[in-house]
Image (cartoon, rainbow, N blue to C red; front, side):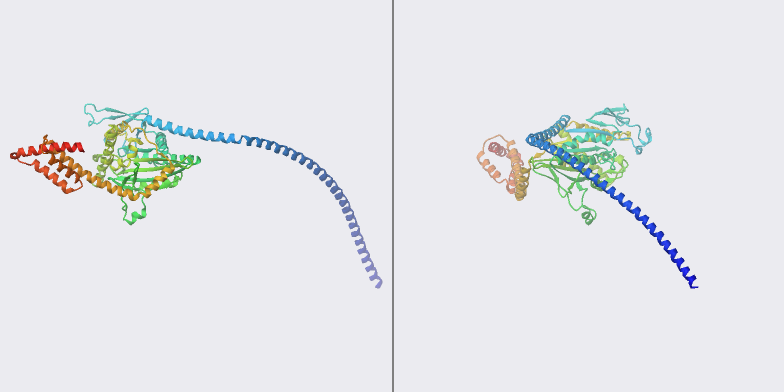
Amino acid sequence: QLRESMEITERSLTQELYVKEEESKAKDAEIGRMEEAITTLEAHQLSLKQSLSEQKSMLDASNEEEIGRLMGEIANLQSKQSKTQSTGVVSEAKVRELEEAVRTGRAERKRMHNLIQELRGNVRVFARIRPFLPKDGKQGDEKEGTSAPFVSHYGDDMLTVVSTTQQTKPKDPRQKYQFSFDRVFAPSASQETVYKEVSEFVQSALDGYNVTIFSYGQTGSGKTHTMQGTGVGVMRGLIPRSIEQIGAHQVQLENDGWTFSVEMSFLEIYNESLRDLLRDNRKEEHNNGKEECKHEIHMSSDGRRSVTNLTVMSINPNDCASIDAILALAAKRRSTVSTDMNATSSRSHSVFTLNLTAKHEGRNQMMRGTLNLVDLAGSERLNRSNVEGRHAKETMSINKSLSSLSDVFTAIGQKQSHVPFRNSKLSFLLQPSLSGDGKTLMVVNVSPTEASVQESLCSLRFASKVNKCELGKAKRTIEKVKSIEKKASSGRGNATTIEEAKKNKKRATSSKRDNTTIIEEAKKIKCTSSSKRGNTTTIEKVKKVKCAASSKRDNATTIKEAKKTKGIPPSKRDTVTMSSNSSSAVSRNVKRKM
């Protein structure tokens, strides 16, 4: 048994030895392979080192060549720079010369633009025919009082009105009336087409002139559509398009070193009272929906108009969203009512004003222009609008103010010495633009329907009257910045003096009235006789009366004496004759002394 166990152990050990030998042989073979790999890697490493060394040598040579080339370019650039520096003064002078040429060109453009405006006339009239609308009824429907358009245009400056009513001319029921204006827009004319012609007047305001653009016509003829339009697209009117043009001009001026500012106000004239369309809501709510402040028109020493307690906003003309919101607010607050002629008939005149100021400190210049965009209330007839009560009074007030405006243009057209600007608040507010210092454009809107022929004729006749007016050469407002600042400081320092001057003016007016009364009495005395007797006594009396011009008691005594002289009965005619003869001589002496 022992031997068997020993044999078993021996066989086991022999087997394990064999396994170990096989593992040793495998490891020896692996070591051999690894040694071969190490030898191969060492050889590859050596080859890589040689390759890197060669590449480094090549790069060093290439870098030296590139550095040499760059150094040569630097030398060339330095040489060119020295030449450029020597000619730098000449280049700067050339730049200044070109900039001056640009400024001269722009000044010449402004001069030529306004010269063309003056040649065309500083008062111009455009006519715009409203398209035929569905609310006008079917064309040819006599029961509705409408037919095919009765206002038609010929070319760019002529239009014809055809009247088929017996009221116009019983013997000739188809009477034709022709009118000629500076520009006539067909019913198909777009808002953009109209504004291209109007933009010349906006440019004049940017050049420093007082400009007023009216939208005139009967109610329902499209005045508000022309002036304000609708939406933010192609249907925009004159007001938003004018602001857009001003914004583009502002960018150009600021690039040239100018400081440009725009101030905006929006009011309406309702029954000859002024209303602020941009008023503060909080004040209005506090006063139960009524405006808290009253507004009056004041005239400054330079002839400009201002309205007291009026909201004046500084705006950025390129901020379209804010401007659209402001215009929408003003349109909402404007007085309108529904009538038989128009569902949203305006009951007031609206005046949208932009005060434009451009200042250049380097040139010591300030340029100020004013642009008034006026949407007039529509003229209407009570028998067609069928309004009553308060709205009837509104119609009469509208027609009265339009009549006053017509009187102003009539006086201007006839070159009268007195123009009744003060007869209405509208004409008084716009006097700087309607006088010789400004430019005026009227866009008369007419309806094409037969029912509106009479109103259309009235509107076109008034527009023809305006078209014949001549304002003369407009004046441009360009001042020196320093002189303006001196005036402003002097004005602030002399506020008390101005108030005193106003009081003295009132006293002088009162005294002038008293003197006028005395002079009238002296004229009456002069007319009653021609004798020179009793001169000394009467002269002393008149001297005393003249020295006491400010005393109302002396004036009353003088008037009473004149009345007594007039009322003496015929029995004392000789005494009257003697007294009147003496008075005549006295009055002649007084006249020579005066």
